[in-house]
Image (cartoon, rainbow, N blue to C red; front, top):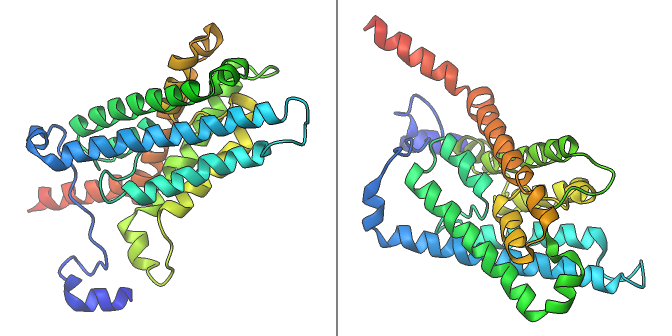
Amino acid sequence: MSKEVSEEGQTHHHGKDYVDPPPAPLFDFGELKLWSFYRALIAEFIATLLFLYITVATVIGYKKQSENDHCGGVGLLGIAWAFGGMIFVLVYCTAGISGGHINPAVTFGLFLARKVSLLRAVFYMIAQSLGAVCGVGLVKAFMKHDYNKFGGGANTVAPGYNTGTALGAEIIGTFVLVYTVFSATDPKRSARDSHIPVLAPLPIGFAVFMVHLATIPITGTGINPARSFGAAVIYNSEKSWDDHWIFWVGPFIGALAAAAYHQYILRAAAIKALGSFRSNATN
């Protein structure tokens, strides 16, 4: 199929069978005049609200069911499935509207890669954070006693681990997620592997699932600053706020590393830019 694309009018892109979208402008105030921009913000808000409601409710429900029966409830595997499954569903639902970020770290990584403007990135992060607060607020409203009793789904450093270990876990976990996002949405990969019908939200959801399996015992798994922020605001314990910086710094560093790796190593953007500079210099 990639050959067909190349033969049907794509040869003018220097023989490439894919087209990279142009870099997003750093500031694009024209977006503020578009309904599609506000529609995307609403989609990010609602998606993050639903994500936090389902996942935190799953965490609280598991802790309640397993309090007197260690084999009760969905288990850590079920919690990981809840997070990964909801990301799959919500990215699938919102990808065509907002891009399906549902995570400030993902938005930050895509901003660094010039996939979204700074204006859109900032507004997305605000919408995601507010959605997370509202989602966790619904969990507390519906099951207040159990919510307060079982920790509110807040991210903290687990006993036996130090902040360095927790920070490293958040960095690597977010790297896996954001790297998967870049790979799953890469137009080059989509063109070359078009004979493999892989739905982009599927590997993204699986990445979230796998990272949760590895890091739930360490930090409860953040890899999403909005998720951690929403739980910290509603639960509002001293411990959750003491550790809270980890769940912003770690994901943002992980997103930065993933964006740099994909753009400058795998896609060789630095080499392409250097080649373009040399070509212009000789003309």
